Image (cartoon, rainbow, N blue to C red; front, side, top):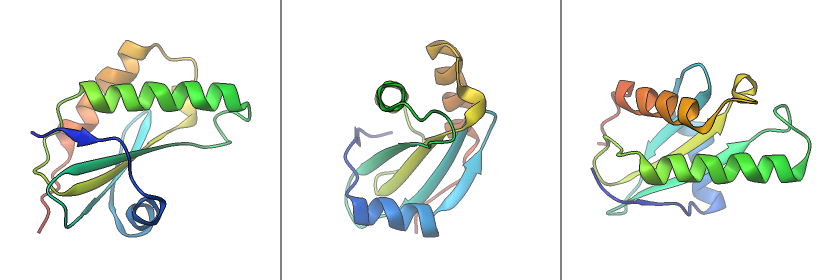
Length: 113
């Protein structure tokens, strides 16, 4: 388990969304793709479907970044991941979201080539 860089360049973000392997659970979508770096990188997304208010979207982005930062990831070094919040997550407490994210990360079977 390695440290995750919370900055994913837009080009790599879009590549992960289009070509990455997808996983999901009750509150999240997760897309993962291998990169050629020696570190994991993460991006977060909150759709307009969840909320149209920018302040609320930014709040959820901060929550997602915090979850990624605090949760040990079971991936080897060299993956890009994008964590997206589903509409069902609206109004959930941080602990519930963190628990669901941990379950999602532990259920992934991704191994980069």
